[in-house]
Length: 236
Image 1: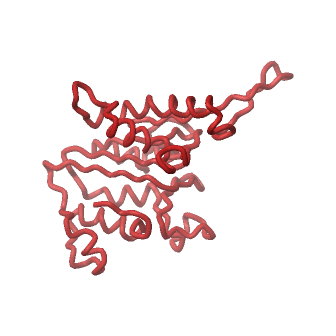
Image 2: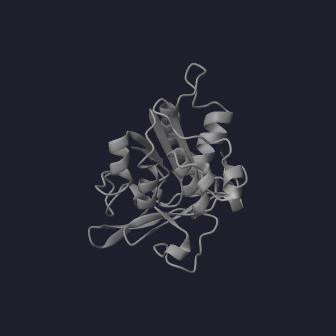
Image 3: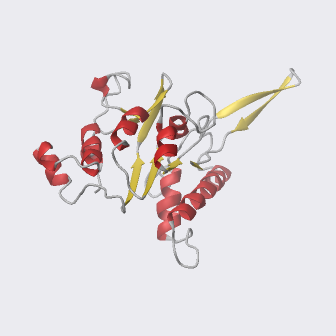
């Protein structure tokens, strides 16, 4: 099931996950029943693959996905904003128990969702990382907590770096294939290596001059040097 543009709302994303968890479709709206006509409840022998490519934001210690109906004039934590927090995702995924589950999220500052603070460590006793640990959920985050996740019009019309590495390079060009076969974990690992190399190449060419976070590192208290932070996806 693919949700693009106006279909990619908070309500539709949650409704899709509810169907996967076994909620009867007759409890959905008529448009949602049409959208999810081919979707069934996840069985123990099934595999679950979720891919979010879009906007995101960190706020007040939580990370939020910002779907198509998000209201930027309202704080993400406000229900009227229609944002999706990592806690919302945890609740939605709680009753889904497949044999294997994979979640890719290509969104700005995505790594924050794996942390309960500003730390890089992935463990979060109440968030998405704890759910991943408990349910064996593989997560591919577009960037680590202190990094920005970028997109560029030069990347197939505006892909994020991670989506471009996964889809255009990894799948279409089959650069992630091993002996002609593309498997999920090697595909994730390929994208994790490819994204910083891709950013370096575009920065070197001048296409993305000035893009990305910069930090100033004090040296001997008198001199300072600027370090550009590359985007590094990570698998948990």
